[in-house]
Length: 149
Image 1 (cartoon, rainbow, N blue to C red):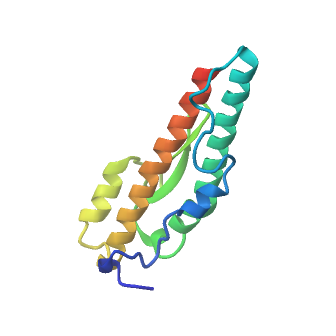
Image 2 (image 1 turned 180 degrees about the vertical axis):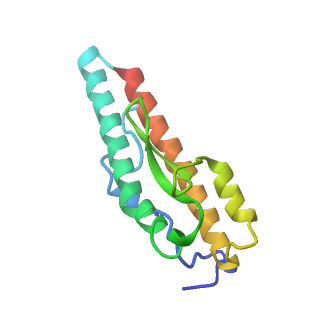
């Protein structure tokens, strides 16, 4: 593995374009700006949005959470975990292993904490960037699907 200071990550491998291409309809929603004739095509499009949201959540579980819960991240006092919402979707959140606290402030504490190994800082930064992007994409697909219903 290469040195994190050179822009590479020693322990975390962010998602790449190839991961998104495997999702249905590649990494974008075809036909977003098209005329919808009747409720049927709009319902179909809403279903496609929800299906792609679910595929993105599964991708986050397989690729991001699997890494974030492995070594050396499992040794830290905060972890990346899934949080199911009442609206019917799932997001990635930072939390304490005992579930006593949750939120991005835990990640900020990890970064500022002197006991956090310096060689993990680039990986933690990449994890947080990936978390933000995935949550944004999941939220967008969820909202589009709900609005189309």
